Length: 417
Image (tube, rainbow, N blue to C red; front, top):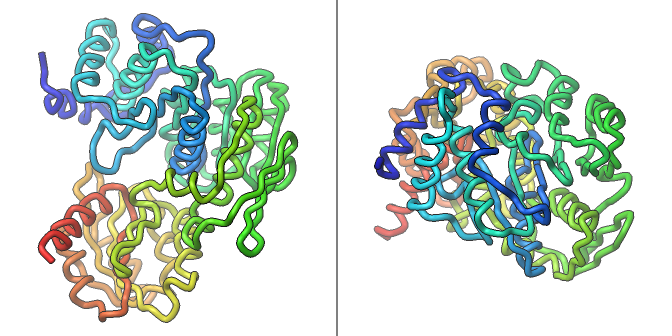
């Protein structure tokens, strides 16, 4: 039997560039290894940004309501088993190995991708736990994503913007069409604001009851009070902190609407639920100096830019560590922050296809920005920290891999101090 590490090494090489994803083959394996209770409800979440936060909010609210929940997310920031949680707790390495062995036994002639192995393992673990809910995050897109082998009782699209154009299309309408592929006939869909027409067209074709942020439900903060208004219920509670205003507000409204539609009687205060739902690497601020954010497209960097306008960062210079995947719109990401960053520290994160630092430097040269090329994220982090004055902010963003490397280096610094 392979070890946990052996299995991860094996499947990490099986990308969609090596093995073609296929919902039919994956469903065939699923039907052999998984048997879900008809009482288990399935929530599927897609969108360009905000999926992880929305899923975590839904998970925590369900747990607070005494429900048993399986949560599947991607990618992971530190450890693979972060992706698969039961009642908020990561499953064990032994459980994952057992499922990989079972998948290998039942896949027959089929070759599977990393994400197909991962998704099948998660679903098989969940099927053995007698859960009330599965909360599943789409990896890329929706229509052809492995998670779409499950039939959603309710589907969520958090937002639509340009990302993964190579796979999903060159405009938001095409991307919306792909993402709305998770919708199921006559099942409700919950949508963020500013959705492209293609999403509504798909919902109409499938006769899906549709609930849109800003139309059927809304959320706003006035002073110290946050107030949610929906088609079924309203909720009013004490406000949360400045950070959560930016990270959670719309996602919280989407989560509340979802659970209202599922008939859950939600009783909580917003401060408690947002504290429980914090995720590492999402506008995570350490020691009044280090800001970690996994934003990796212009839309999410725009969100980060808004966060940097809060009073937490008034008058503070920004020294930014940036490392991205070669398929990302790094020009658009830089454009969002070029007027806010004092100096850039560019590195190639330890990932399969990082964008070459020389390519990034060409973009920065055209903007007239000051930058330093570094041999790795750790070196970039150290240089940014040493160049930044005492009151400045060291920002790390661009990829989960970039934040992962910087996070561990920061941990060493904090342990040594």
